[in-house]
Image 1 (cartoon, each protein chain N blue to C red):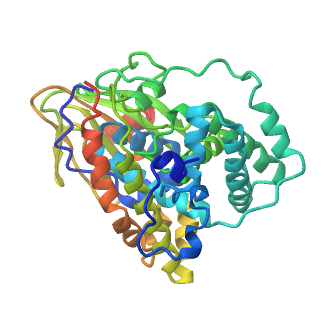
Image 2: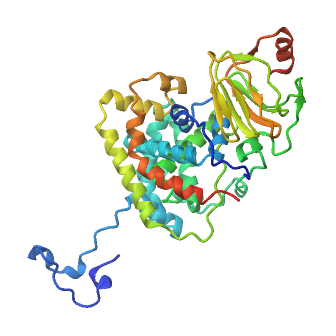
Image 3: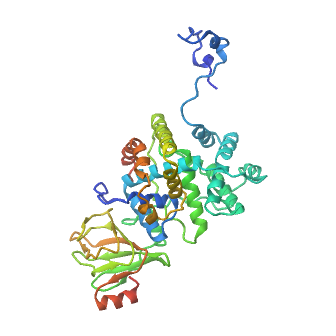
Length: 215
Length: 218
């Protein structure tokens, strides 16, 4: 954990404007956490350090939500927990595939869960896009990860501001309760609202993808 | 993919990307969307955005209580060797077929069957929810006039075609519904290979094509 001790070995002058009470024992004050979300930090700890405690945190956050979504989609509790187990173990085993510059943890979990659910629901394996060839020797770009997280936070805020009936439609569309023609027919579906929130992130992502095209 | 995909002009509409992300498209359409996203950076980024919204919905949706023991069972499982064989290497495609199409082909060359007028097809999958096939049309050749009982998605994998609605180059996706009666004509540069999916049988106008349709399942 970063403290002022490791951050600045020399006695630092008291920060201007900080109330004196907060200065007491300032050597124990931790730096403000990086602005990556908890979920991303847990996932990176799993990816980079095989950190089981971080995995347990991810489990406690995602497993009940996944079960809720699956049961809402009509799965019985046992089947829902089977999928939860598959998805959570995939998070652990495929952690090396996690790239916070391209996808947020929740988006990644959403994708894994949907793929697994479709695979189980029918015989033909789900058709998924060809993976991009990894960029050779790419340095992690923390700014891109942060930007994506900020976009995602704005998206969540935008969703929470929708009228209840609009929000319900969005949920139905994304949780697989509407067919594509039903989605088209729903004139009140604020897909555009949702999209505009992530446009900036999209532009960045698209720029990055151009460099990733396979030769 | 060695094709120049930078000029893709016809993309997957957003409602279809959402349905793809949510897993509600019939398999035939799902394969076409996955194939287009494989070669189209713009739609890949759009799909990323859609999945980001899906993640936000997942975050917000009500949680369900887990049964006792699930957590410990999974945490205990982390060190267990995987039951499944080691993960297969990420599938790669083979020109002009992107990976998901190549997989649907059984990872071998298509088994072309002639359907007349030099046009060949290879059915990849057909069931009650629709069908998806590869079509190979000689240079400059027209497909028979046809309209659709349902929706038809046509992705150009090689060459190009044009019809009453416009020009479709490699990577472009045409979406035709039952109001469109069209005659696609392959471009002159090379044989045109398309991935075509319907959620209903095509309807051809002439008698012979109709008989051929019944026989060849096109």
